[in-house]
Image (cartoon, rainbow, N blue to C red; front, top):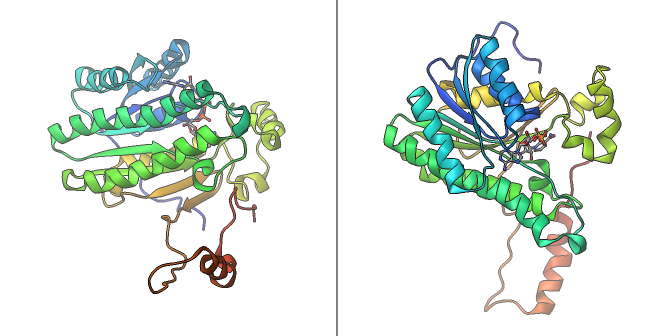
Length: 307
Ligand SMILES: NC(=O)c1ccc[n+]([C@@H]2O[C@H](COP(=O)([O-])OP(=O)(O)OC[C@H]3O[C@@H](n4cnc5c(N)ncnc54)[C@H](O)[C@@H]3O)[C@@H](O)[C@H]2O)c1
């Protein structure tokens, strides 16, 4: 289905959003799109220069933004972001928890530092920012939007990404949990599973050349935009704008993917089959049940083959 060209523009005037890791790539595209739709944006990055560039570009285009340079992961950084929204713009409506790093290694080579760096930024960063935002939004008592950024790695597992896959799967579980806990306050919590060409994707050998061509201005082949759901960071931003808006007030606890030309709704983890045995199961009975009933239904790990 193609997008309806005459659909009305989605506006966010008067809303205030925090976007972590918005100095470059996807986070930058989210901050710029939110500001273009009328939101005031707290731009955050650990890199001061890139955060300043995003703010400068937003203000040059007539938008409102302020930078908070901090490494998300601590309660202090989360608090500083929320305080900046309240002191600079007077309120908070939207949190986009996007900041992240990769430390890819196969399990037997992954160090504690590799594991902790990724868990701290993605999972603890989203938890601390989500908690600080939830406190402010509940106090404000006008609803709100929390968007956590997942990954296909968290949905399917990913070779060499123990830390990242665990953090990203955890984020989706957090969003689903918060959708329950924050429903009464009118605060939605969703996970976005983006795919886009960025320095992060460039580290995947299969996409290195496509990324280099994209950066060189050679465009993105149609097959990548559709079958690999891989486009520019700007292709992902409309989903963030929609989730930040009034229109998505009844959407919560969902994992939605977007990249290139493709929008995706992910399933919740579900029961595929059950079997009962009077008085419980022996190991031998489990083996029999596995082979006869469960094995044909078992799903593979790893990303789905592109169609
Ligand atoms: N690019 C993709 O296809 C893709 C796919 C799935 C998920 N994601 C997720 O989207 C998000 C953005 O990815 P990207 O491709 O734009 O990555 P990127 O590496 O290009 O940008 C990440 C930004 O976050 C900043 N950052 C890192 N650690 C930080 C911290 N502790 N505090 C504040 N800022 C920090 C970096 O300086 C950088 O500006 C990440 O959460 C990533 O896991 C990306």
